[in-house]
Figure 1 (cartoon, one colour):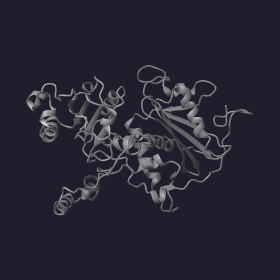
Figure 2: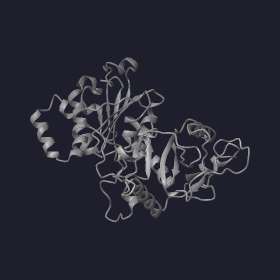
Figure 3: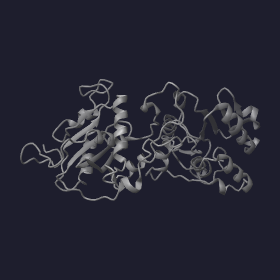
Length: 409
């Protein structure tokens, strides 16, 4: 409809010729066997270039051309990411779960023409980037819908009942029948209990030891958390984030300070730690000054100690420690790790960080068995837990008359 200028909404904004991409997982199984056949069953032959499919279709270019100049190019996720660069487009359609870099390339192609994208999928791969970027987005330009199989007027009740019976697994039913994002391969923190570990916010005394942990990036959101310790119990008291594109180091520093203003009056950070990319000496893997090193510079800097967690043993130890602290202890009948409700992103990541559904035979280490899906806040929690202060109590700040409310500098 958009290609032929008959779309009731889009065609009023953009007239043909329009340039469209249609992307799907596999060329043979999806594009040729299903999608192309479906499009040909709908399009009028007189709307095609040359009046028939043979003239309008280019197998080599994977392109369908229309007599008004519009064209649809077909791509599969099997292709190299570089193929998705190139010309500007008015629209892209993505069928089923796709690699995130392909989505970014498609989005980039729409900028000059003020185009749009449509994604359709059954989330059979579990919790993937689409939930973060689409479903949980706060961008007013993004909209989404969930559709239930039971509301499909083209399917019989008997057929749906047979499908439901065949699926068996209740978790898989959530994904297949209702389109919901669910962890299909088991949660890493399966002992996280929202009724126990996720607690209402309450103001904790300002003198208690606090740890600030940050996971800095340049191309994806930078996240941070503050944990407050008392007698071996940790409350994750604060979370914050800084989106790429909102500025550089100066703006990131300002965002951190604004976030920390939410702490109780008089509260100070006793320990500052951050995930440092491998490289050492304040440099990243490219030999450039790391984000942590830049955050520490200047009078508005933060005294962040780098914590290199790339080691598999450190990673596994951190995960195991978090698990241990989430458990209810038999004597106290309480856990040692709580997430306050003003940290909804941290809470949500606990509910969705999962093991891979399939792993290679030679994979032995925990890190390799874990599905990485935007677990930035959980990394911060892991660093905070692993940096538990030996002695908690009043935080002594060096010097007198310090002006900085957080660092004591």
